Image (cartoon, rainbow, N blue to C red):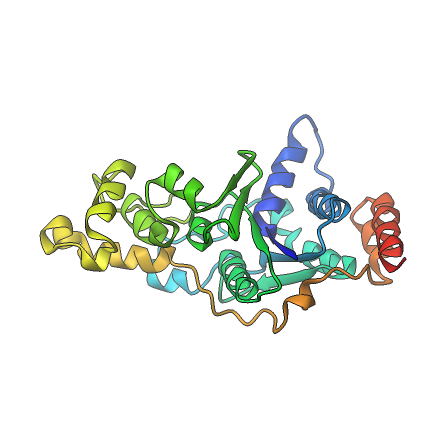
Length: 276
């Protein structure tokens, strides 16, 4: 089986701002409809096991470690208002959904990938997000990152080609170069080429000679903690919990609520074909 893990937060942002282009109005739940349409396309394409992670609360434990870490400040109210309806609609659609509070959606994706990859029945795990930090979860060609934006499937070789380091060293790399999206700046004067060279020479930051980072060592280690995704979220006990088995009875009303009643017919037809 192939397990598909979807970054619901990224998809919601993508559809929210994509829908706005060329329109004068924002449908109240238009981005939710867009995300569900994407999931429906995956089901139509033969996906059988899926899970979607969302940031139910934007802040996480990382905000306590670094005050400047990303928050929900500045997020448009029309976008913020669509997170909970997305989670409810996905549940009614029959898709496993993980709304994260103390951890982030990225931690859920990392945890789900870790759990799924331990199962011998799983042939491949596909993580659908372009986020750099998820590259640390890639394992050979068995756990891969699906970058819809770049139209790329990134296996371990692809991660090395893009960043110059092994997937397992992505937290070290991001600690050094920083991640503006997550709100930490990295080490001043250390760009991508320098970071890749240092990691290639010395390995993880903990093994860098003292003189390489000097007074910035503790700061780099803190940023590495921020960049390291958790893999211990107890999301499911058996990968079969991610198998799509059709919609709940409430899905028709959910589809109507998000302004796409035809989606219910489309997905329910898939469910009927699934049951034979």
